[in-house]
Image 1 (tube, rainbow, N blue to C red):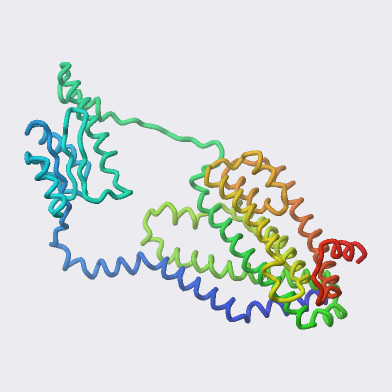
Image 2 (image 1 turned 60 degrees about the vertical axis):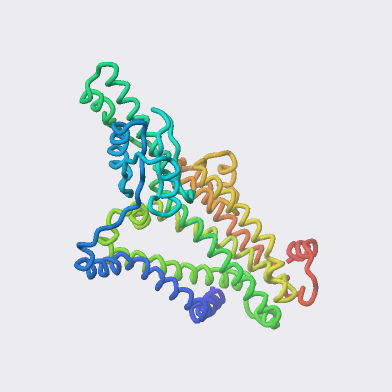
Length: 416
């Protein structure tokens, strides 16, 4: 235990004194501070410029409408004017070619030319991929047609308007989990785990390979047990990662509370910083265990690398394994189908369960015993992979200067 404590303290101090580690943490904290204080800063500028802009009218783009008769044009203009608030809607009796010339010259943004009671041509210079004017116009003209049909059938305009504007009342009661509410929690957790595993896993593998290439591993292996060394290194990297995440997300929470009133009722930001405690607890459990199992694998692979330059090639299988699991979860998560057979199977596989099971917990209703089974399997796998990684670490000393083969590693581990 004393050996483990010394190694753990030494490795943790290495991370905390690393300039890159500290620099990245400070950069992210400053960036988050800028984002969280942005509404307050913008509000200060807007208040300072309020007097100078108070009497300045916003010039709206012009939208032209033309129907078969002046009366119809005026009706369409009034209806469109209420719906298209970003435009100055005007009726016109000009010919189509003149309307096109106005659009091309920039005097008019767009135009709707009615070719019948239920048909029109939409003219615009550059059609944006975000242009939804035709969708809005379809609904408005459909309402106008229905209103005119009712009036022609003998219904008064007031009765027809009342029928067309009836309000539908609805109440939604969720008996399980609200996926929209938990969407951002899950999204952030999955990507945070993705970044931390790839970053710190690579660091663990690189540190172990550096010790091996400098022959320091041979000295260390004679003064400390491989299990103490491997667990000390991996748990130190895990603690460093948690410290960094606490600094980043803790500062985000602090800055958000300082500027909460400036964010108003922003649903996305508000949901992120109001995560239920139970879900937060599951996030810590699966995040920590998921990181540990991959960190042990990266450490074991790093000890088998013959040269420091071989690290990227050596860890590729582990990285690909994680990326495959990541994409399986992300595709299911994006589609909203988190209870498929594939996701349920992935919830019990140690290499994918940290992401898959947490996603199911956040986005669906999972029985408590399934969660317990997944956690127990994951804990057992972490311990088992940690012990095997320690044996591979010990065997790695004997593989110095040679190209490691899977068969030789398995045989040496079995004898260790």
